[in-house]
Length: 158
Image 1 (cartoon, rainbow, N blue to C red):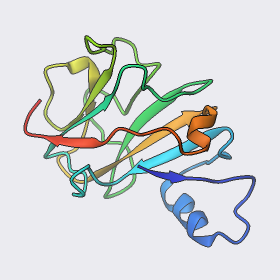
Image 2 (image 1 turned 180 degrees about the horizontal axis):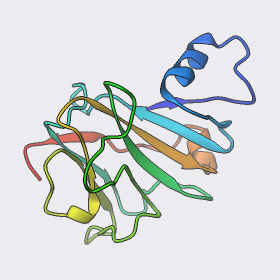
Image 3 (image 1 turned 30 degrees about the vertical axis):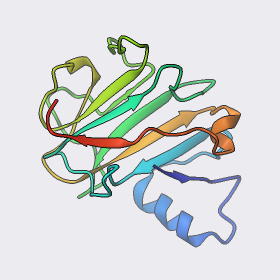
Image 4 (image 1 turned 135 degrees about the horizontal axis):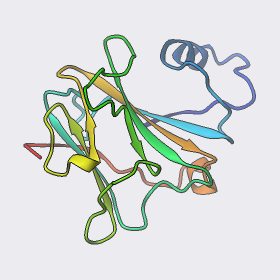
């Protein structure tokens, strides 16, 4: 995942300013929220809802935040939510009903097909998409890049 790190203002960082203007509506400073973007899976291929993906946070490995975290999916074609009947555009620590793995980890499933663990599913369109992991009031290990973010792994099926 690629972090977008904005401090108090953009100064002369025109590249970040352009990325923010294109992909984000409102952005806060890195002390308040970190935005991590993923456009490709662990196989370096562009994320596409016609494939199935797994994102597994190991036991004790959820994002460390003082407020909350969320993983949101956007269509690559227009940078908008995927209008799906489930109306689930994001999952995170405030999502009711998530099922944790037996060892205490958390596996999220991303793709167009519904997985066997429906509660942990982030529906994707049958086209390219990208993910935004937002960390609200992130702990220091995120600020210092000491947190190891799990890979977005393509899987054959759910």
